[in-house]
Length: 326
Ligand SMILES: C[S@@+](CC[C@H](N)C(=O)[O-])C[C@H]1O[C@@H](n2cnc3c(N)ncnc32)[C@H](O)[C@@H]1O
Image (cartoon, rainbow, N blue to C red; front, top):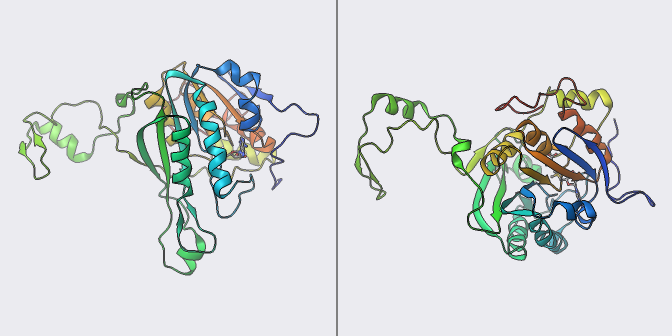
């Protein structure tokens, strides 16, 4: 199995943007985001993307195999993408960016660069921040190792920032599409039809029937908690079988699912310019959304085919909903 997933730039003479595979609903390109956004392919997407959902390379302390920019250079780079990505959106489209934390090299302190980069992106794109989310990964291994495992002076860093932005204050969104199961006590309340109404210390005045209607589920919170484990999935089996490198930072499929369902309808177009192992495309396909993704590393691209039944007979078929994809 190759450890290095290949160079970030194409070989001399090779096209800067090439279509590597298609599925019923999507297309995966090999390209850097810069080359793709400057291409004819991106021009054709203008005004058509309902959701840009992406996790750019983080400004990490230790570079991952796929490389990452650091410091001011990172901020400038992320900022420069905002107007170009915004141009692709439908009038009520959204951009959702997931960005992890970064720590100062050699010091037990966090870098504010991820937040500064998100702010710079928002400003450069003249975007509204509709809502900030935290994505908690309870299965995350303890890190940064030096401060958490050895020095024991910090706790494990276990969440990422997820910023939902858009050019308008009212992008397409419907929280009824992402309801979560009621808690046991809420189910009891709905069944008993009895509620202790009245004024709370918090100032909320709870009406007689406020919580007694069954809406089919509860409105989810802005802290999302999903374990990121792929061990034993058909996708991992596909990688092993074909000798492809597992992606070092795949997104939680449930996170993609949440935003795709919340912010798009079947048939809408979802774009991930930092496709990696193409979790976004896989989830979009399974939920009946069209998708486009780009990724410069060929090994990740070829491996990502393992999410789709067209290439991997074990992969989950498109119509099944609600389960993590392969
Ligand atoms: C955090 S990962 C995305 C992971 C992805 N969401 C997944 O589920 O696998 C960032 C990806 O961006 C890619 N990348 C790095 N520089 C890039 C660039 N200039 N343009 C496009 N992609 C780039 C990396 O190869 C890496 O796969």
